[in-house]
Length: 295
Image (tube, rainbow, N blue to C red; front, top):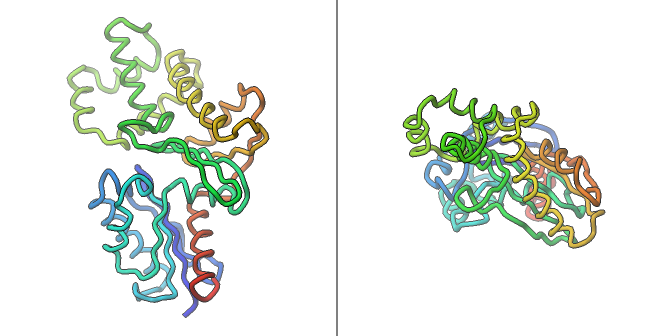
């Protein structure tokens, strides 16, 4: 049987996976649920297992112990915890490599080339690849970081709506949009008592839309987030503004465009070679080449 490669990109909101056989797609990209193995190890493990099983079925592959099956999982939370080893042990596959989501974002954007990736979706993380080595900034999770990510934007929007309610900040369209949704303080507090990062991230599109419409409150929130991202980029560039920067994730390209309009010296913005999912498949191809038949 020819080598089958499976790549999976798992984030805090959802996950995507695809199989390749002999360099060609073996089925469509399939989607699954949240795959943060640090914040929800049991649930993420089950959702990852289910998604892998569906991808294998679509590819016509029925032997999980096949040594010619190579799987790379790029997962939120994998770099910050010991959950990767537990996940690998819980899955029935022989060749599984668990990486952080930033690792596959870098590989998707640059493959072997040098550059900086700014990955912003539900959370945020930045990393530079240089001479085969990675230096990363951020990505520590919703509680302490993930600045400018969707969950962070949503939480900041709710906090500012409360400041408007208390008279500390001038009223603005974004605050009115928030209160139109929740109507009462009790409803908002009920929401935050159980909300997960993906729930906060669902508010982020309102922040982006209000920013585009000129809302000063939304602009201030995005300015704060973009200021952090630019500081992280400058830190990773280490004085060399020519180091290329690529953005991935649902919010990454939009925020990088916003940052680049104001950055001085100018950023060298480049289009990613591929997505994080492409990066997972690229990594799987490299690993398969060292372990078995070339895909």
